[in-house]
Length: 291
Image (tube, rainbow, N blue to C red; front, side, top):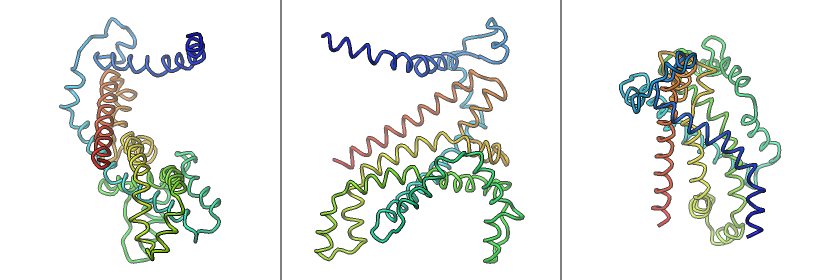
């Protein structure tokens, strides 16, 4: 009993910090989402009114919100497989016996994760430039006309996806490398003795043993990609024609451009429920496949 009491005293400071900077702000945001909190209420709380689910119902009637949701889903559906595939492929190459200078390449491929997004976004904007960008220069070398990557509504989101995959795949690569290193080498030795090819080893040993890691990476990547904000904010400011406005970017504009803080809080909780639902489906799917 005395030991339990001492343990609570040790964790009390951490729990207090979590409560003050995490749970209380979430509760406050939930309460704000049920009001019409705006710049007028910020100046005088007497202008604050309780609207219940009015902000949530209003979102369902807002075309810009549905467009932002569609853009976000497009980003997730296209970007997540590319990111996981790139990170898994890089991890397999770095884990193979043929790879040389492994520490150097691991550091180089992980470097984009820890670099400042604004700095690399500026570089990528030059790469996407229509007149003198590196990508259009390469396309011109094979006879393809220049593409207005960031100015064409059809190409702006694919450009954002390409940039986001390059920026973030190194994080998942490290997780995959840890999973690959945990697979017993005896399994590969037995497979080689039996004459199994590299592709057969990949299908029969690597991918099945790596499946829990793949599920983990999938959950983390999908949750992260649903929170798309920094890339369109820095590179396109939501344009052209709102083609790169995400749910989080829409929430930012509602809260800090138009000062509709009640509506912005409602958007935040809708996004939370969406991520929670997708994550729950992934976990349920994992249980079904394991069974």
